[in-house]
Length: 112
Image (cartoon, rainbow, N blue to C red; front, side, top):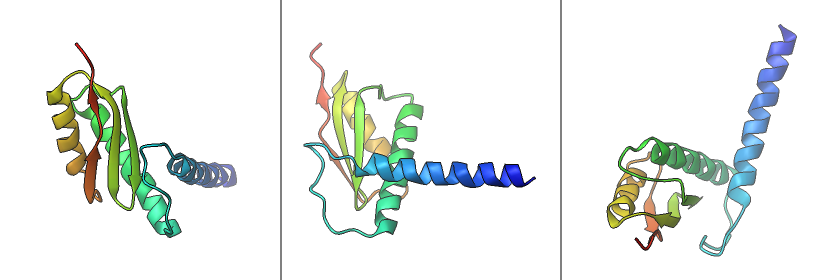
């Protein structure tokens, strides 16, 4: 029984560490780092995870080349999509995720 509790605790710690590490990475299109609390940092990681899951589950969005970053509830979408409809649909999906305060859609439509 203690082993199961230990494994659950270790798994929880690993998930939090992964979320913190994933959101700590920056890119040229992400907003500059500013002072944020640990709570905001974890919330942004949660939002990013929800957005990625919803994009993968959306039947009207081809999301294999969409990158997601979140800072203070604002979600940045970068990458490429096959059509303008996919770009618009991706933004619609993201706007409906709990906790999202705004969307910066920098997706590019791939040349056909």
